[in-house]
Image (cartoon, rainbow, N blue to C red; front, side, top):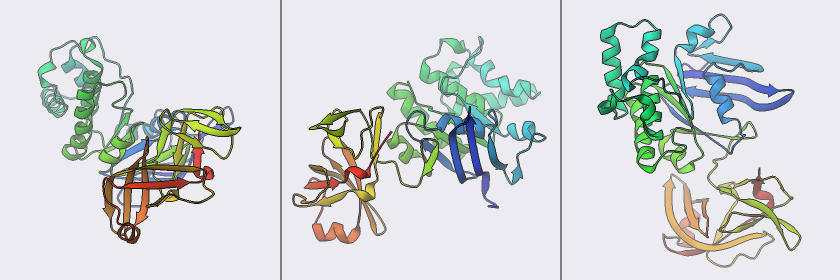
Length: 335
């Protein structure tokens, strides 16, 4: 048992009509962390959030919360420590203030406690000025911020956010991203959120859990592109709208592809190899982490490529330099 763990998963599975939609052998969420769940639609992100919120039962496996095994006898008590903010939260026909106070009212908190906690929560999400507004007149972004305030007011140990910036204007996206950091810092709360925005995931979270077809993958989902499958010269390809990527097998129903950053070759000269995917582009970013270097190469789409510090120095790679990249069709995962 990990003494720093807030939630521990072991052999977790969820199935519908015999079809397994979530299969996580083990995973630990550490207290005080910020976790992002990434992956395409249907990858199991929302299912996992519902199970972690204790609103959806698992088919098999075990969950431990703060070192305590989840059972039917302690489900209600443990659920008090976890709050889920849905992708499209519902506001009651009442003021913002009363909506934020709802959880505290259900728990029988005193008027003074309710007033203090509502004020603090609205200040955290930057909406104190709207406390007397009818909550159903808010914009989409404001509604999500009020929903987060409502979750914070009851001081949960864990806050779960399902696509918190989906269908939100740019102004509110930036606000919500900062709110996630503030929630984690000011309330000492573990935050777990799902997102399709990889930049957001890696920018905000301490840890990123990638799900594909309900299963965790141990590589970082950094080269993730959407598009449509087709054929070129009789061979299966995937068109992102900017580049065309060769596939090893046909994938007629695929809507996304991903490529492991470690499986992409970079060179100063044109690459002569059997790799069917070869592109030329410009280095737009270089990030160093110990002996590992992450390059962002723009070839129409931006590819993240992992190389060693030695390779960086030997090739003399710098931002703005033109390079050639290549990867095998077998390295492309389509789904």
